[in-house]
Length: 248
Image (tube, rainbow, N blue to C red):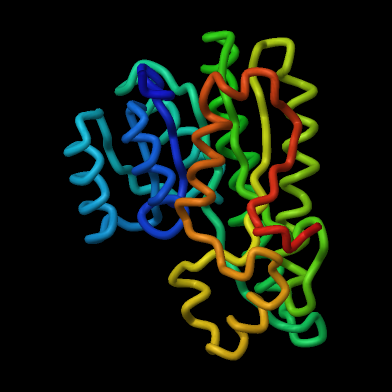
């Protein structure tokens, strides 16, 4: 039996990278998949085709997760079209890295809005459907830097630390309704974003990792399968690090 058979998942920022890997992994486990991204481009269209080819129902939606009204609208549309939402993966996120002395107010506000406010927006919109169902799993994408901090990423680290506090609070608020809330904290994951770093910087990161390699989006997706499935039915309010032992 597939671990997510009969479930419907909503994944934000899923057209590429970690979000895309989660969407594909969920579909292989039998979940119907609704996913969002900022623009309807070739990445969104190709993912939609790949997901449908796996034999599940799948659809991409253009949505700005940082916009409260827009988030509510797209969640209502997905709930109507798919009938239910069992799993929410808050994955949408950006970076605007620079030292604090050079960081503009705009860079701070943008990262907080996209990374943290989006989690509030989607969770608030989805909770009414999960409360009615008396079940649900909310998975929020944090980061190891949300726990340990990192020079040059004060805005990003603050947003990811905020996600952890939010996740634990939601777990306590909604646990009585059989709704679970957990966070995933990836470490150095090989994506298009990390490919923009120099080889020297990438190797410096890898030297800090006990497993001596960068992670893959699939490594993160596997943990999300566990958290979305009934295998984790007694796991809530937790932060699971996917970092190869880096944050140990």
